Amino acid sequence: MPEKGPLPEVTVTTYGLSDVGVVRTNNEDSFLIAELGSGHAGLVPDVMKHRVSDRGSLLVVSDGMGGAEAGEVASKIVVEQLETLLRTVPDDTTGEEIVRKAVERVNYEVWNVAQQYPQYHGMGATLAAAWIRGTEALITGVGDSRVYLLRAGKMRQLTRDQSMVESLVEVGMLNRSEAEQHPQRNVILQAMGSRPEVVVAIERLELRRGDFLLLCSDGLSGKISGDEMRDAVLTTAALPEACHRMIQLAKNRGGEDNI
Image (cartoon, rainbow, N blue to C red; front, side, top):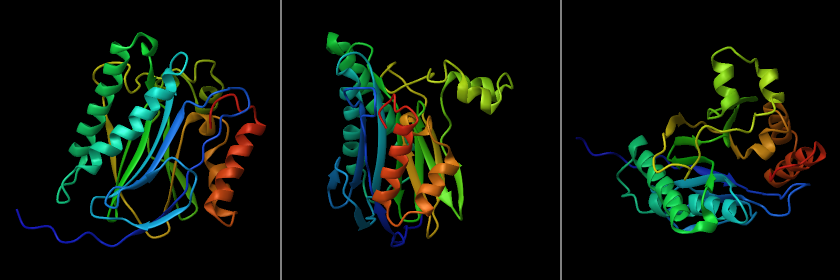
């Protein structure tokens, strides 16, 4: 095979924010922003502008579920283990298979911990992730956390909800408005750690200058529409302001879940 040339130089600006919401007392959501080449990573809401290294930049959101503190444990394992696995990928490798194997290994790790410790039995978590290398992003999702693309003023959902109501929409048994109000809209068909194996969906995206990627748990997407997310990003001066605005809107509409 011919040698690959250097990846195009790409700079990204990232920001993350999580809120416990209005009803719950603990936050089972976790997120991670990591520049895998430099080793810079954090779960704190700081704006980070950086050049994407050959090893890539990773954005991850995970929504935990389970009794007591099990959901928090599951989502933390998902974000931290995925970063660890992708950080060790050789610089000259790329492709969907790397992401698929990494997600499968993380899924097994969550499942294995749940089997070993009774207090964590039945725990699981969703996953929404974007791995950026050069002008390419590999997008993956498990459960109903989402990745959106905002490009040229239009918001598009890149991941597919792995939920019962989404399946009913796809076969024509529900329309979109009915699905949004369905009493079982939060029932998901698979989660990280619920079984020893997981089916991994991956989409390859060629990035353009000015693109926005938005990753969120259903505490946000279940309360505000894609168009409202778009407006929050395009009509505010900076990413922190946009995130605060979206979270406040979700809280104003009930905020029953972590956001």
